[in-house]
Image (cartoon, rainbow, N blue to C red):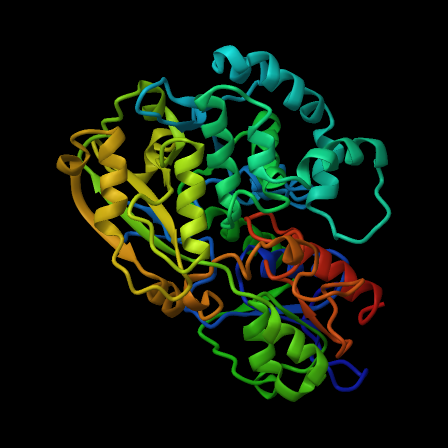
Length: 484
């Protein structure tokens, strides 16, 4: 039967493929291999699957918190996820009324709404500019997402649409913000672009912000009902239905600990893969991995709340995501400080409010919220007070609503997942060079020079986000080469 575990005659391999890591990319790689008739086993060090998509009771019983990822604009936009019957396996998206909001002290909050016209109308004097800049790209979204979530070096299927997007996307968020006059529009761009975790004057930061805005206009910024673990649970259920296997509680420190297979796929950071593979990877490739720069760390706080966050601007109370940090210049300064190895006194804080759209996250009358800020990689600074002060700044009385909190420092993230070294949850810095050369300059970034060893994590294009595309592309590479 296709996908069934069996003894093989080709070199004694037990499986066609072994995937190390059970996050969204690892499971996506395994699903793509299994649905193409290959036998595959996923090996996970933790006792539960999930990687960056787990949901746990971090604070109080019945308060369900997403440990890492929480809001999924790229998951809802993912061409791979869209090709799978994940709803049949329990995944259901739930959308907030307002996708994202950005409070300001001297103005109404900027908001991202499903429609381009509605978002533009809320930007007052910049309404026309937003329509002019964003509406044509939103119309091209199907072509753009194919390129934005695809391998970096290939002949584009929609060259005209991609060129139109690329003319803006390759620029900096600073440049893009200059197309707008109002603090509200510029703040909206800053919050979107700051997801890149690099200074806002870097190339491609406009592309990060635009991609998230366009994804919202076409697919929304949804939560997975019940928690982000529903994404990996659905992928795992689908994988098993295809004959794939999953083994948890199996730590791997060397290739000799893995079952024999024709292809090995690592849904780990590039550095973790290099540590496990050791001399099986050529020395030159090992050096390129060593030169691959880590991204900043994150400091995260989860709260169990007795009431919703009391935002001064009502739009923020209805938003699934709230970008907190003031205007464009303030956010740009905070992100620049992190890039210089400093912790900002007023950090950019990304807040999600799952219980706004998903009442299963907390008991009746209760709410959950989640926030993180960027810090230098490996920082030991406790950012709890600064994160909460930023929220209190735009939501007076917030601290009185806190019933319990749970914090995760960069060191905690690394203990949670060895691939998050220094708190880098992105699999490597999204600097201009590393947007393309991820993790090194190769025509096929997923296939290592070892041939049968593949990398399928966010250390490869298109990079971070719960979309499964890194795993999908690595699986397609393995099918072309090792598993023909």
